[in-house]
Image (cartoon, rainbow over all chains, first blue to last red; front, top):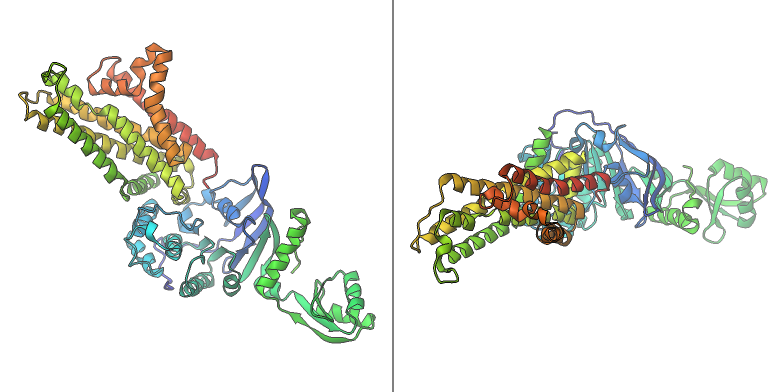
Length: 320
Length: 248
């Protein structure tokens, strides 16, 4: 795919549209697929939407896009629900179903249908096909496309109206490394231009390189959200002569302490100063006290395992 | 204007797959069978009396009943496959007001069904006319009667496609939509007549014949209204269902 900051065919628009998920609950047959979920996606940032399979990511996106109704709560785009937007497709570009194509219809015709519905010049179809590098296969039936090509076509549909908001469900699935890199560059440049980008994914490495912020859900509930950098560095590493004594002291102060390597503690919820103070008061010698940066994968499993243990009711929204 | 754009998009959907070609092939196959019947067919006594009057010939080329069923299947398959393939998501993203989107879908189905009905009747009339050249009879149907046959088939095709599209939107499954359309057009009407003999004049095939000018069971105006009702009721049920439930 080629990065191309093309002209907006719809003319100038205000491109600042925060997405707000406000206490959204969605029940299917009495079971909550999304359970009182609230978060905000800011413009100018790429927000990764993370969670295990069945966590409620796709359902949340469908509620946001008006494809499914919330049992309670509201999902808005710039303060309006999707159906209230004056020109929804020129505001939001979405790809929520990777294989939502008629297998007998060509990729070009798939986009032309959307262009017809939104009164976009057909020339724009050729432009977005070129952006996603699908021009050569554009007249082939979509049923013969690989998963990666289908992803490109879905992305082309999302980009067709050059909208200021992108909502993409697992856009990296099936893309080759080159495709993932160009997708990353494309989305990052859109965010840099002030657009709002929400991308769900279970490819943690991809999100780690792509997202500014992350929202993590599990079993339909919010586990944590915030800047990726903060979330990864929200722990401190402590190596001491008496880890047991220090752990008890830190937990009394409200710290969340995990034992790591022998003699090592990973502490959350307390600053470096507070940890040093407690160590001093407990007469524990410290060999190391530093900021601890987890990989996103480490953090992801920690977040989702925490909530999996106790179910939705035990959700502990981490403080950042 | 937005609604017209949506209708245009829906028409492109209907014409950008091979499905219309398949249905046109069926129409031409029926036309070929009709021509063969004219050329080779005989009455019980071996004569070709079934071609001897203008009314006989008009009855032979009346296509509205077929148009109802064929366009009904077309509408049912077209709309149900939109749900099956998930392409309906694109429709509702572009037109989030679902009644507007469904009405556009039904309108496009009406137009496509009307075209199928017209082509079917034209092919049928052409088949009868060409078949007659191999017999001792000439083409006797008057221009107004021929126009009535064409108009009736066009109307029936449009109505059938709307009926099928409504069932497709309601059922969302291709097999179920096809079964439902056959049930409504072919299975239920004879059953209804069994229970209420007075219903015989109001079943789809009879109504189609009335509109084509080859049956006088009810008035033409009443028949047109009744055919519209046969289409509108399932379409309205489909529209309400789509409005109330989640798209995906």
